[in-house]
Length: 160
Image 1 (cartoon, rainbow, N blue to C red):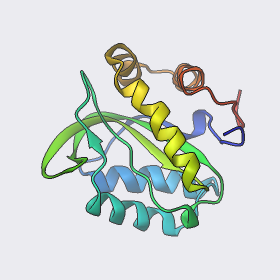
Image 2: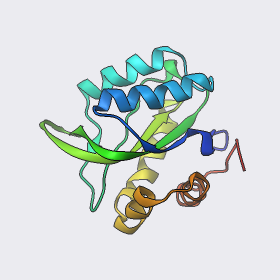
Image 3: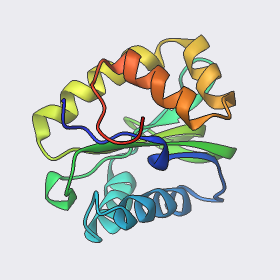
Image 4: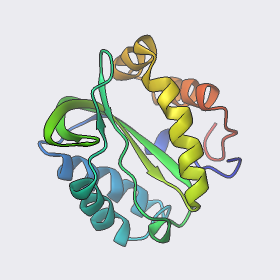
């Protein structure tokens, strides 16, 4: 995954939103403005989240990992948002329940097998309560970028 774009410009701190759709739209717009995804990405990711919820009630801090099909992506990237206040997302695999999400990892992969590899690495982070609490409370985009780059073991293209 050496050509993954990941820098501070796609790490959104204290992101405000009242609904998951609002959060996904703000994150998606940021990626569209940077030409990392096509304009169709936003509607596609909201529609997919409505069909297949991605909220995970992990230890300490709930996370969501919204993603959609590769045809909406211009360049492989992962955007991270630390929400100012938790927003309810549906729980993965449970059509009825929600979880108050504080961290959103929006995946924009240009190859399906890359998405699976990244999800497997993210799951290791999601099992580490200390790391999740650190990410949820960190106020430096650079610190978040550096921690995730080391934990996800990818080389970065983008800001230093």
